[in-house]
Image 1 (cartoon, rainbow, N blue to C red):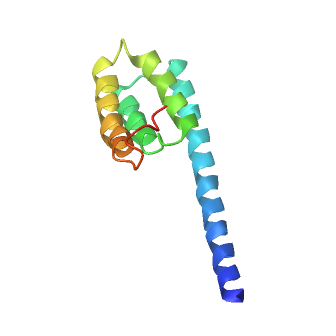
Image 2 (cartoon, one colour):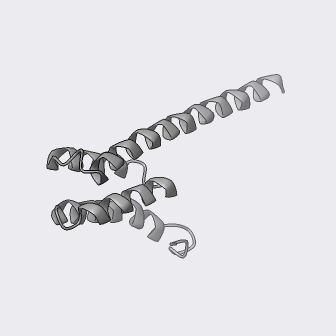
Length: 108
């Protein structure tokens, strides 16, 4: 039984470390989004890279809200970036929901 308890403890520790990394990523992405909203970062390539990075975390509501805030702000300046992001988001996340066991009824 001791080995199972150690294994569970190790898994919990790894899960905690992953969450800590996600928290750090959120803090860094929040600062970058704030820089765009304040006009301190305007380069198209930087905005595109930021959206690409945020996409990796959009399975978590706080990242999704951050991304929505950014997309609303940049929509008129970079509509193609927002459109590309939305299409990629749908490919990555909505198809998973449609293929779920409950027939896709778990959409927000």
